[in-house]
Length: 214
Picture 1 (tube, rainbow, N blue to C red):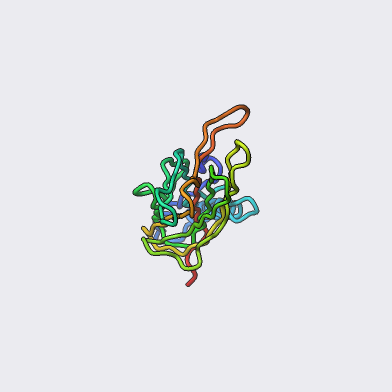
Picture 2 (picture 1 turned 120 degrees about the vertical axis):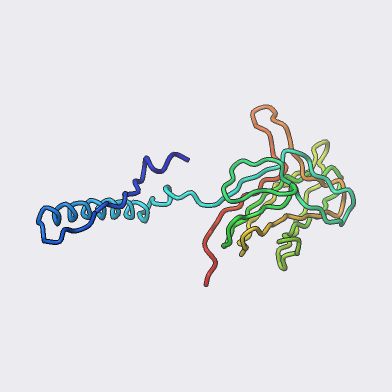
């Protein structure tokens, strides 16, 4: 992001000094002028910040991560944590232990994810994805979907994703977990080919929404 100081000036606090023992018009005028300039700059800055495009001056906590490797299930109907090995953007959000999306600040957060699933079997197969916060499953977070079967020589594919609003404390971490009813279903990364670029197996973003309600 561009240097916000070049776009939105933070006015310096005026140095007014101490008043003389006797009233002096010059001293009054100097102080009044300094305060007038300060409040004009402050009003301008606040007007820009809270205007229709004011959010462009705000750099809120966020994280954008992806996985560039294939992710497989060694056994059917067994839970595995989805992993992330690349950080695209991060401010107040990080990934620990390859899977733990960790936030530095308490608040309401929006976690969005998408996975590129592949099925090399000749039958459709189901996948389930859910959340854990600090190692504990989040009630109601599981999503079910099917990945289409291979058709001819072409494997079945499904790009699946959704988002969650989460109430988190400072240093909490969130993980995406998955399982499939057949090990021929994978979360797959692909290299660039022809006219299109490479494909990440998993993408996850975490953005700060607001402070927690009191």
